Length: 171
Image 1 (cartoon, helix red, strand yellow):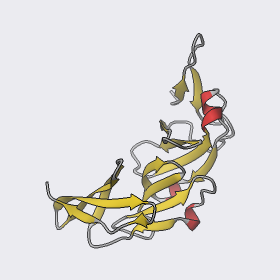
Image 2 (cartoon, one colour):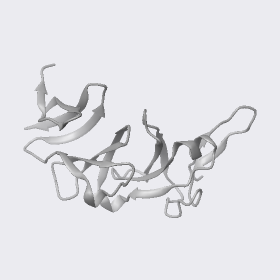
Image 3 (tube, helix red, strand yellow):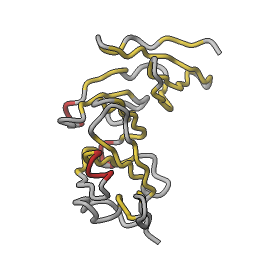
C-alpha cells in the first residue's frame, strides 16, 4: 500500500497531508516513507520523502499554517538527484548532508524563504573525515564522522556569525 503522513484535528478524522499528488506534490513516488520536520520559530514545514532503501531523500516545503489546517501546498526543493541523505532545520535555515560532488559528504545550508540547493552555502566542507550523520542541538550542529574506520563526534558551533570549524568532542 502507498504510504502517507497524517495530521489530526480535534473532532475530525485523520487526514493525509503528505501523499503522491496531494497538495501539489505531483512528483512524490507512489510508495515512499514520509516524515515531517516542523522547525521551531519557522513559518515553514518540511516533508522528507524516502523511497525504499535508497539513502537519498527528496524534500518538500509548505507553510506551517497550511499544514496545520490540513491543506498544505507542497513544493519540491530537493530531489533524489541532489544526493541529500539527511535534513535538519531551525528557524528559516535548512541544513542538508549532501554527497553530491563530495564522496565524504558535506553540510550545506539554505534559507527556507528561497530554498535553492544550487545556491546553498557550504557550512562544513568535505574533508578527510566521512560525515555519516548530523544532528542539530540548541548549542551546535553535531556530526558523527569516521576517519580510518574510527567513529568520532564533532561539534560545529552555529550562531549569529555563521558556522565555526568542526571540533572533535572527547567521549
